[in-house]
Image (cartoon, rainbow, N blue to C red; front, side, top):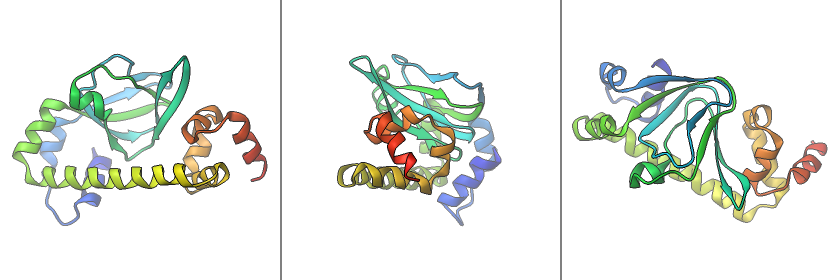
Length: 186
């Protein structure tokens, strides 16, 4: 729980948080490498905080696999569409390595949002930060050539170290051959 508390304190510094509440509403789940956290067709009922490890979020389109996102330690997220609509997910979330997540069920999340002003503040600011980061990422994909998109990953070494080349390629909208060529120039 310490990493989650530190993460919350970073998002809302100088706002007192109730550590006891966090300990009661989050559950720890350990995933071995290649274990599914969420399968295609399941309804997502949790928000997740990655305490340790790496998760890959991907989907299939016309039989081809596409990586949407890679989530590393200290990342708080959900499969938003399924979580909000209660519809089956079209995404699969799998552990790329042994991973530990802290998860909070939707019901507990709603209780916190109704009863804890510090959690409301954290949640709002965290969502805003995620949206801003997503907008920057989309802009990068829309305006930059493949080489620049690949080079942007070097500011996040874990992408290069922990993620398979084919998964990076689909996430960046490239072929694995393009990634190989770009890697050879580094």
